[in-house]
Image 1 (cartoon, helix red, strand yellow):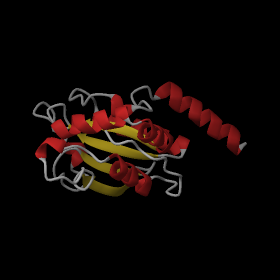
Image 2 (tube, rainbow, N blue to C red; image 1 turned 180 degrees about the vertical axis):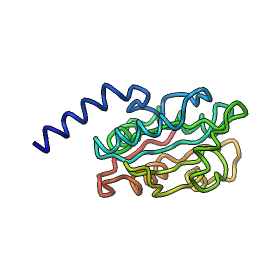
Image 3 (cartoon, rainbow, N blue to C red; image 1 turned 60 degrees about the vertical axis):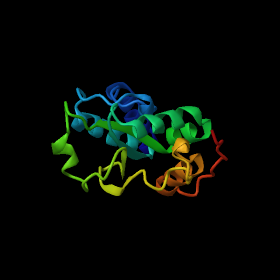
Amino acid sequence: MVSLSRALMCVAVALLCPLVMAQGYANKFDPQRDASKDLAAAQTQAKATGKRVMVDVGGEWCRWCRMLDQLIASQPQIRAFIDTHYVWVKLSYSAENKNAAVLSKWPKTRGYPYLLVLDGDGRLLHAQGVHGLEIETENEADEDYDPARVMAFLKRHALTPNAPIMPVQRK
């Protein structure tokens, strides 16, 4: 009976939560979206699928936000790990919509993108900017994310932290 109710919950999530896609990291930051509804849908999906919620706070105006999206898109191992362990939600912070009501529940953002890891009940487990996920270099032209550091961050905060990490490719 428990497995049947879990299966029904998964079907309900798939049908009722089209706002949150498994590949939310591929979406754009949209100031018109209802962040509260997106978060509620992500939490429901995370609970039903045994995942964590990753809230990606930023905007299309943010170069580092776009760079993170590009890194994820270019790294099949990172994409697969995210799809397996997270429900990714983009929360727009922009001149059009600062999403102040939603963001006021969490620590003040310190730069963008700002990543918040939540459990399926919406409890904040971790919050951090992307400092420390970059490639260490003296050359400003080499500014980018380090795939290995991004993967280590994702693994550290996944619900099943001992999941194997596949090697990532440097750009």
